Structure formats: structure tokens, C-alpha cells
Length: 221
Image 1 (cartoon, rainbow, N blue to C red):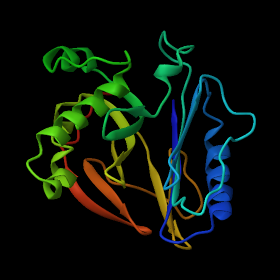
Image 2 (image 1 turned 120 degrees about the vertical axis):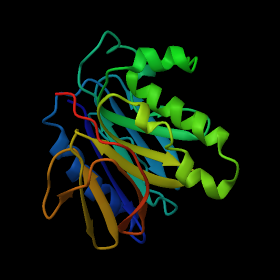
Image 3 (image 1 turned 120 degrees about the horizontal axis):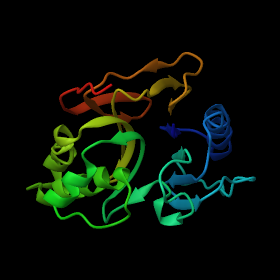
Image 4 (image 1 turned 180 degrees about the vertical axis):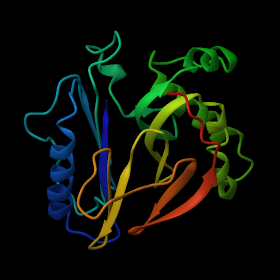
């Protein structure tokens, strides 16, 4: 299984952010890693490797208000392809995913989705489609997730959209905890964390969660 983890801060020294991120990353290293991606928020640095970073390449920056990460499990036929390492990006969406989308091929055919041949990219592409179809900037926060009900499978995701971070899941685990002006999350359970509810899209606001959308929970296993 892949690992999702990250920390978003309302106020936090960038070096403290990095320390928290390292702890969450180490917790998820038990998941077999064959690809690692990192996105820093504020300074906006994106790093990918189809192995794992022996030494983190992150450069602390006073503008930095969050670090989002993903460790990819060695699954599929594209483990050597750097373009198949999370996070996946469209014009307005950055997304990382843990799980499997069973109807990815059907959705890509239905909506003529092109891009990396990975089911995770299908989620990002559908969110971009909904983002483009939203009639106003205000409505985008809610309508960007309007195609999630079409997904069949299990998934947990973080998404960076319009300067905001969102979390959502169906079956796949995702734990969160707010502490010292930060909101931390991880695929692995950690101290004082709780699992977010399935079928709810949460926006991280300061060190709390606001639900902005919902989708039906589906069981497949």
C-alpha cells in the first residue's frame, strides 16, 4: 500500500514543519516505497524520485506553510517511470492517492482522459474537469469534487487546489491530528490521531477540518 502524510500550519517555523514532516514520513516508511513525491506549500517546491530520497531535498523557507508527501508502493508496470510518481498534476490540481480505482479505464474512456497511465491520475483529471466546469470561483470549492461519486474502488487522497489542501477517503485509511498550530495527517496511525470519516471532503483550515462536499461510500472488498 502507498503512504500519504503531511503537515499544514497556521503558524509554524519552517524548521519545525520539516521536523514534523520527517516523523510522519518515517512512520510511513514501513510501507514498501518505490517512488516518493514531496510538495511544499507557500514556497512551492516539487520533488519526485522513482526510488526514495536518502536525504530530503526540502529547503526550509519562511513562506512555507505546509509539506505534503507520498510514498508509492511498488505496484503496476510503471515503477521505473518518474511520470507515474505522485503527486499527479493537472493545470490547477495536485493530488496524491493511496488505493485502487477499479473503473479507471472506463472513466478515462468516458471522459477522454489522457495522461499518465495510472488510476490516481484519473482522480486528478476528473477534479480538473469539474474545476473547469464550475461557474464561479466561489463554487469551485464545492464543485471540484462533483465526479467523486463515479469512482469505484478504495482511495484516500490529499489534494492541493487553489491554494487550499483537501483530504478525503473511501475505505483506505487516513488519520489526522491538530497540534500546536498544525494539522497533521498520515496513512499510518500516530499519537492522538483519529480517522476522518469516509465520504466527506475536508478542507484544512488552520489546524482544523471543514467539510465542503460529500460523496456516497462504496464497499468493494
